[in-house]
Length: 351
Image (cartoon, rainbow, N blue to C red):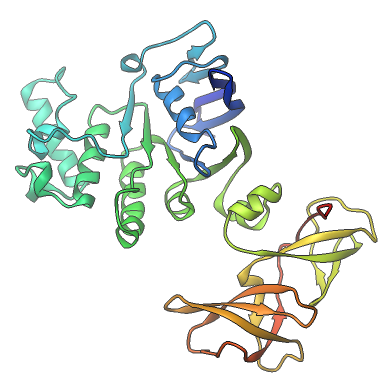
């Protein structure tokens, strides 16, 4: 197992009387890419600023490579933390070309060493042919890669990325997310990404910490966040889905309107109790031969698939992802069946 590079132990931060981070704890192994994911105001950017050294902490401690860099009594300034940063707006120097931007932080190297490192990174980020261009001559994706190369140039111990794709269109975000992960991994760098975009988090990070109101709700892989959410907030925030009422029969069976679901139930519930069962769009399968019918009330075309909103006989609604060659009309009834591999159920909310 790799050594732990970054450790946050119960850190707290506040702006005046407004608490922003509550007892936040996480660890990141060397070579791992982590992510802080959550809605606006959840504290993820403040946590990143504390790690970078742009802000101190009120309590707890931040340990980088075995050394405490921030606590109530200790504060190591940003320039001494060996941390690289990719900002939301890239923060490129407009008067410097690509080569000079990438080499800006390499003043301690000789001219030959600096040129060698810059050439290496130009190749890594696929910008060799754009080396003499200025930021205003580059596309948004190219600017993002220059910013990444500049942050990687000094070989930091930790790389921080603050909403790095927020200024790009959706199709470019998806492609660059994959590229950025490959670049970071190829350099053996440990990194933390901050974003509100699940697709970015899923594409880049090895582990994702979902935050809400300054607290870590769940730190896990993308697969587990989606299929085994720790609480109702994570279940609602990650992916799409609806809750249907269900009755617990035993530790492996829950009865809902669609029938009896069979799978291990991760949260302990007493037999006979009423729970809310999470159903994802991929849990509902279109089946023309099924006697179970549902009425289409809404449809969203997504290219290869159509996301149908379906009304069940009892009035409840579910979502279903169906291959787009099954193009049914609103108001039409279709056959469906549940195929649930991971039962997620929570105590029913009091009305």
